Length: 162
Image (cartoon, rainbow, N blue to C red; front, side, top):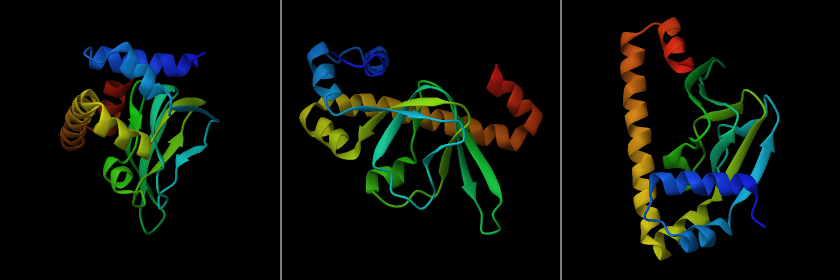
């Protein structure tokens, strides 16, 4: 029997890329795992190599950079139905420049790097799903940049909670 969190993730995938068939999703699900994280736990610490791309099912993760003086700079907040991943570091298997910390109890569905590579090679529709996901992430990052340049912290917070 498939884990309910993996089923929830697959339903999200299919809503984004409806051409994925049930059999393709079932095949893809075989390599997925689920993790439960306590509040304040680190999903990824900067300087480590991320082995999994994490899809947040429940919870909230803070993505941040720590400078040479130890100051933490928030990059973004990763809410439900989003991925917790520094994509270039993950795909190249290099150390992440960012840390990812759970701000509340969090559940992730984990996609191993080899599993993703295999899906790209053997199931072309997954490349489309990944491209659509990256387009969404790019739009969010561009909006985040505009917000940083045009809004104060209070305005950005209000936009986030809405």
